[in-house]
Image 1 (tube, helix red, strand yellow):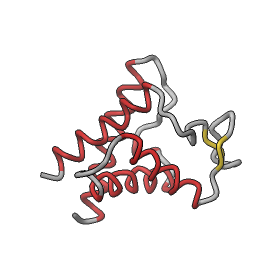
Image 2: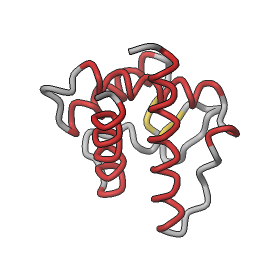
Image 3: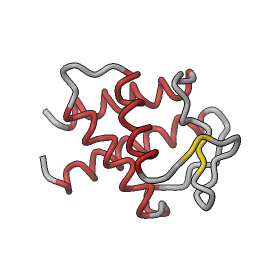
Image 4: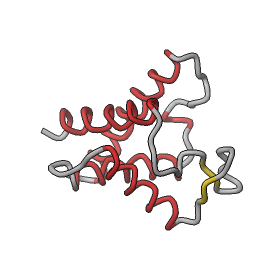
Length: 115
């Protein structure tokens, strides 16, 4: 799969997740076109990780792969999400319900769009 295809899948997945957040009353997710390059790169990396290990992956493995990706880039677990301080509240071992929904959206969209 090409980088362009990975990025297209990442955009569809991100917008589906953003819609889910909106349905819960959260307006914190900006549209894909308004994301910083680092955020788009992170989403695209998550798509590539899912594609790479789709046959054996579970939610815990994609989260673990994402955590490793972020930690390798200098991010740490913090009490708030802050791009300047490079802290994230979801660099934890356990996924919340919302994070599991996000992972399930990723798997479903990757499966459908990569067939």
